[in-house]
Length: 214
Ligand SMILES: [Fe+2]
View 1 (cartoon, rainbow, N blue to C red):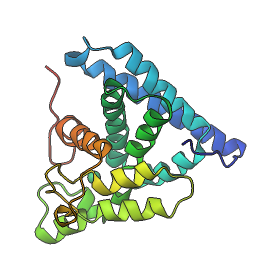
View 2: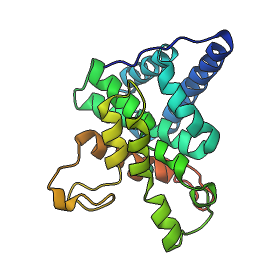
View 3: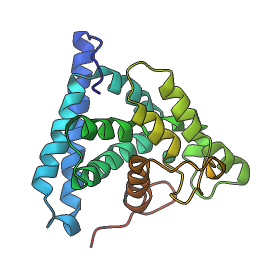
């Protein structure tokens, strides 16, 4: 399912163009840093990701959802962009195409929107979180899914990925779903892999120095 444009004025169009240019630049610089994976089919992936990001020009609702995230926390926004690229890479390798691939991109860009509801001093705290702060941080999957469910035209997959991306395949993680017997959606698993085993290690945060590619 594709999101619909709701129309825009000139100033908003200029903002969108700037965001698209910025995202394409980020995608390119990410690829330049991924020497270890260069032997894989990066050219087709790069084309697919850039084409996906270019569709944001027509899909203003996506930008309306993620722009507040960018204003609230630059790190969370950059993280979402990187996770989106890596997850699209996994999705393409698994044979997903067209609308499915597109929805994966939308869902991954929006997966951490719930962090807008985590107090900034907790979200950007340099150093370890205490129990109370950790509890606040753990609310963001539910807050994000709730926020997205109230918006029109958001793919169901975006709510699922927002809710499940900190769950683990065996039912651990949060929010706790062990009792329901439900399995984590494959796209939520892909987001989890991208987020925790790649992007979180590579992106500089106040308290953590990034890994570098070999
Ligand atoms: Fe998250």
